[in-house]
Length: 62
Image 1 (tube, rainbow, N blue to C red):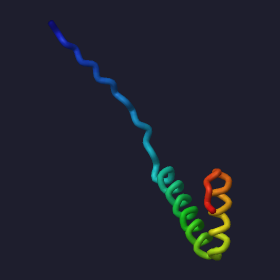
Image 2: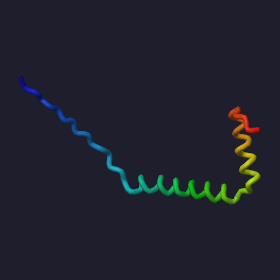
Image 3: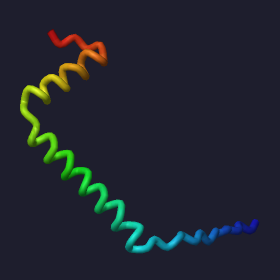
Image 4: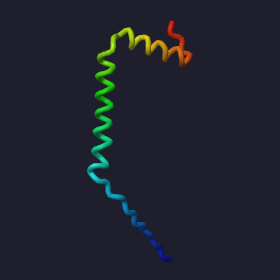
């Protein structure tokens, strides 16, 4: 009895440096924008936004 094994050659597409750097830079910029925009907002605004989200999800909050 003979067992034959078949190996498939999978050619992976080459990823350029630009294809990796551009999404990383965009993600960093979005993250920093989120941190700074939320960090500069007053606490009442954040509380009201969280309160509205709780109500929209029908979660009792008070």
